[in-house]
Length: 498
Image 1 (spheres, rainbow, N blue to C red):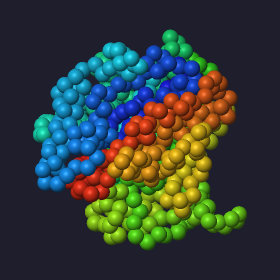
Image 2: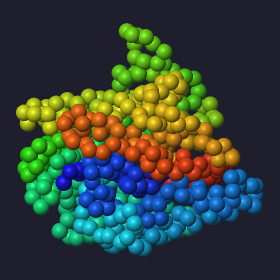
Image 3: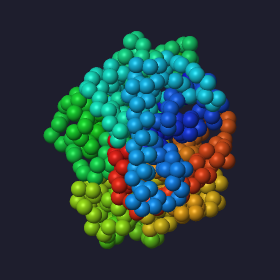
């Protein structure tokens, strides 16, 4: 097995608030470069109806098809909202009661969309996974969390989306033999399996969800005071920011599990490529408003406006609110974070990344060789950040630098005539990468793999990556309505925050 992937929504290819376009995600792009054929020797799920909880891109395209680039007045808007509700209800019905429900065999993605069913996938990344989920979350746990009555309503968004996704990824066939297989459980199984040749390369990227929900929910709920790993796992919904000490405890357990699994690996020359935690506050879902504040860069990466020897600083703002409310100078406190809160989140993530580097170094020392390779995904993101770098982001790889408009980290926006004018690196949920953004991540991982001596026989097909990004090739003319109509804005936010 040349490639096995453990991760969260980014590694799953979560886009525009839905799971998932795994066929476009960085791990699948890496698989292609390694000579694998997705749908044959690199397997992952297929998600019908654009995925769940709700695909915002498909929703807006549906509205645009029916109502054009402008939705007018008191007649069209009620009709448009009804259209949106019916779209969401169709997705909900499919995944809660239809062919996408957890008691059905979840299909494998294939390039020709033919029906294929497999007992496991090479990519077991799933939206929302924290560090501890890698060794504690199983299909049995996911199913047990869903033992609550479903509330069917026309405006409903698919419920238990996190657990539905995890169950489909970890046990697509619903076989009781796999009900207790966590992501680490699958790694252990494959590493020892001579029929698949063990695991040559493991991509491991977790930690973002130990902080990301602070941005989605615009509040901080720390794990401080909850010092038991099992309790934090059971009460996962109570927290959205792990203390550095709690993160370190769980990350050390994770790497211990990986070391144990890979020590039994039948493939002798294995590597583990580990992404660090991205600065979630760079995600364009949160828009800085009010006074600009220059502060020391917690990550030690940025130097906007300074020369050699000057302090590393980054641009922050007085408040951060949802991007659809960006024209408000002093946003509703319940829908915003202030500078001190955002800076606290960034400093905590900087601690996470130092912990990751330390734990990986210690693991390599124990093993007597450099099996674990740290991949600086966060540095790449910070250097590309448009506003945090005072509108002077780093160059993009491949032909991306020459694109007009050049993709950037701002929220996606277009003119009423359908010309893209901003964004392009993030999908419409403002948190997860677009197809082009996924290509950049693949580039970073592939460079790390080459440096570690892994043979990567094929190059990234940038033309295909750009062509696959429908936000760029087929711009959505309806984007201005997110800022002009509060009902649509709140509907889209409700999809993103699920």
